[in-house]
Image 1 (spheres, rainbow, N blue to C red):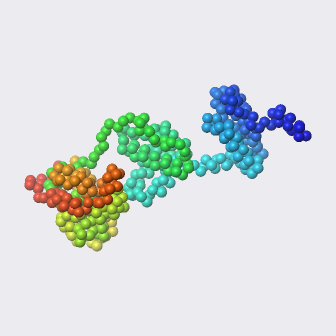
Image 2 (image 1 turned 135 degrees about the vertical axis):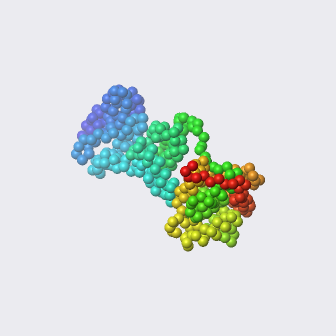
Image 3 (image 1 turned 180 degrees about the vertical axis):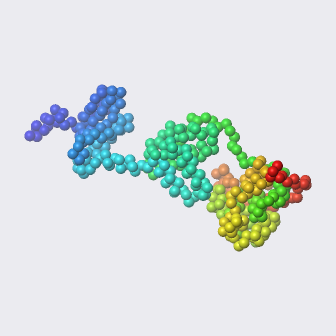
Length: 410
C-alpha cells in the first residue's frame, strides 16, 4: 500500500514543490502545477502570475496571489499554505479574509480626515478649515476614494499639474499636505515604499513668478495716514484697534483677540499667548506711551468686556474684517492691513541703527538658522522697548502737510 502511494507521487499525480526557478523562467504559455493547489499561469503575452486552486465551502475556487514580479515562488507557497489552512482546516473563506485585510487600509480621504482630526488641536481655526478644504478641492476628486497604499507619483502629477503654474502657492500647500498624509500612512503601516510626492517638483515646470507680498504703505506716509484714519467715519473701538496694531507691529488676529488679562500696565507690556501666535511661541510687546493712551481710552468704552477691542457685543471681539473696512472707507486700494508690518520693517532698516535681531524679534519672526536659534535664547525685550517707542513717536508725529481727505465718491 505504501509502495503504491510512493509510486503515485513519483508518477506526478500529486506533485509537491514541482516548480523551480529554472522551470518558471523558461515556461511557455500554460498552467503549471507546483503542488498543494498552487499553480503558475503563463499568458500568451509572457506575463506570469500565481493562482491557488482550492475548495471553499464545497466549491472549487481560484484565488489570485499576484504576479511573479511581485510575489516570489517561496512567498506564493507560503501564502497558498496559509489560505488553504483557512479553507480546509478552519472551514473559513480565504476571499472574505483577504477582503477584510484590504478594508483595513483606508482610502486617501479617510486617512486625510484622520490626520486632520489628530492635528486639529494644533491648528488655528481658519487654518484647520483651509487645510482640509484644499485637499477636498484638488486631491479627493482624483484619488480620494482609492486605498492610500495604491497611490503613485503619476496620481500626484494629475493633482498638481492643473494648478502648478496658475496657482503656485495653492499647489505648494496641496503638495505639502499630501506629504503629511503619506508620512502618517507609512507610520501607521498602511503603506510602504517611497513617498509619491517626493521629487515631483523636479518634473513640473519651474515657477517663474515671484512671491506676492502684501501691499504696504511707504513709512514716510504713515503720519498722514494715521491722522486721516483717526478722522474717518468708523467706530472708535475700530480706529483704536487699528492704531494699536500699527504701533505694536502686530498681526490682525493678535490685536483683535487681545484680552485685558494680557495687558500689564505696571510693566507697560502686552503678552500675547502662544496659541495666538503664528510661530506658536509666547510674544511680549513693550507698550509705548501712545499705546498706553489707546488702552486707557479703550478701557472706558469696553463696557466691562474681557476683550480690549470688543465688537458690537461685549462678549465678542471685533470682526476680522473690521480693520479692512477702514482701509476701504479711506479708498486705499493700494495697501493692506498686514502691510503695516512691512512699513515698520522698512522704517527700522532705513531710519534706525538697531540690529536685525532686535527688529525681527519685534515682528515675532522665528530665527531660521537652527544653530543661531539654539544659542539665541533671549527675546531682546529691553532692546525692543526704545525701538517701539521711537516707531510710535514717528508714526504719530503730526504730518507737516495738510491731510487731504478722499471722499468715498471720488
